[in-house]
Image 1 (cartoon, rainbow, N blue to C red):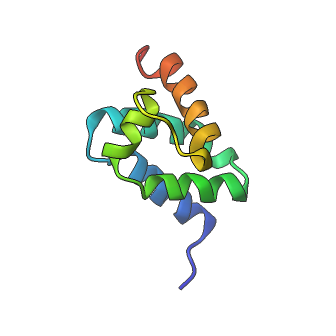
Image 2 (image 1 turned 180 degrees about the horizontal axis):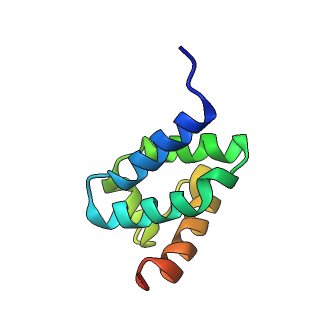
Length: 90
């Protein structure tokens, strides 16, 4: 069975809100609700790959504690800017 685009976005949003670390839930959950529907296929694939990474790896990338792998650098920068503007405010 093939996943519909709507089901994929719903699954990815759910996965964004249920990361395992509350800070990551807030960052990814809010970003996904604001951006997933507007992503092109390439960026959607990249975000899905990022979702497969461990929170213990991603959180230091988001906080700039360690360098971000080049593959994810632009996406992490976008998520980081969004989080600074939206997560702490909400």
